[in-house]
Image (cartoon, rainbow, N blue to C red):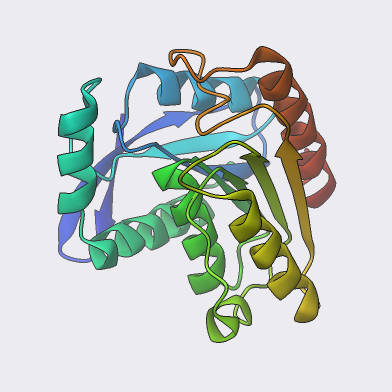
Length: 224
């Protein structure tokens, strides 16, 4: 774990680094409403094997759960302003590392974290790319106008929380503003289709989304 400042507080995150001296492109990795659990840490580790310095943030300050009711309470109790501040601090921490290319920092998140990946793209004009796995979307043009990073969105057509119609509305709003966006809706897949620990997991959709994620990040962040 690494520690970094978020205004007057100190927060922790799981840092995974590639072999070698770098500098490397980097990712802010944002957890689901379960918290910074072993699965999200493993995702960060996977990105390190692909050549990215990956910082998995801990928005819950050390708490994580596998209980849906507790996860719901943790998510409800998370102040959005603090979460946005912690993500901005994570970006700054990565940008200040000698092994990171400060102009090649992206973000990726799942579920709650997917929504915050989009929020980081709204608030951080230097973000180089953002990936949203079935996260909360916005269509407000004044917010979307702030985005400079290309966006990749990966969603399930059967998601009851993030509907296919809302995904299409987001895509249309982005394109209307001339913002670079790519969206994929997976037939037969619901929310959390990429989470192998959940009954909602769909292996074929998850594998395709992973391949698309790597291709997208490789295009916009590069590896050298």
